Image (cartoon, rainbow, N blue to C red; front, side, top):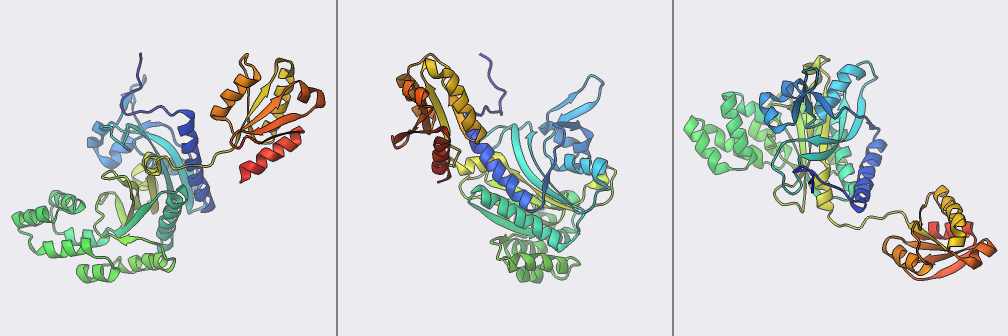
Length: 410
């Protein structure tokens, strides 16, 4: 028996319904902020990703050569394709551009809970606005999208300028090692590393910056840098709106990619692999032949969101099973059509079963049963039965539809 490829999943109808509900909540929230959905190809030229991340990323990607000898790759993320699309299609559009996406991505990694080789991302990109207001909007939109999805999470916000200023005198490879230790909060390893390199003077300031919990504390440690006014303005907006967050000047992942404000969100019930959102300010368009457009965005790990939500009950529209005798089969199609036209899911009996067997089957997957027997066929009525309460009554089709809608709305 053939099996699905490692790191991929099959989704049965119940899981797909849950995913679509949460996906739609995210889309609806983004839409209210003015973000309109875009879509890019599933595969792109390999260079699009190596240009930004270097040749080393190839080991983590699904790459292939097409019949014309072109090197292509399944997209490992969506930001680069969106910015490529901006350069190709969007440079002349009025700015700022508010775009969002929901797409599957592919990475050749070791599969584990919440991390797969085929996975989905929901994200937004704000292109062409270079202001504190733009940064604040993206952070606030990300917070609201996760909140409306039902996730319990904490939000961490920082800025890369203080860290960059403090590491400016170090060799690039040394700085990368230091950043890795800071990211892991390995202060003992950091002390040893800086000592071996003869930079003991940086230990107290770097540790203090990572542990600072107010802008004033960070200012006192880092000193005066050109970005402080912008930093203060961004955080002033967030504070005025009472956004719950933790200041984290130790966010260092993506230091070679992001250019300013950065933020991350962590689910409260996922253990070690708990980051569900990451984003910040960046500039990519010029790498792909475009202008140096300021951009800010984020990506949400949709699969981790679903794991975090677990088996949380999600409301779904009611399902109606239309049960009929052999004589009423044609009438059952007409009645089912009336329910569907009213926006209600209606399932017909397609097997040669008696009414009793039909009812037993309907009880496993439906909320209501519409019964059409000899009496109902003669009177032009139906019997509406609530399969949860057992209550039933004979009525017209329109009344039955109204009854189902009334209960479904509750």
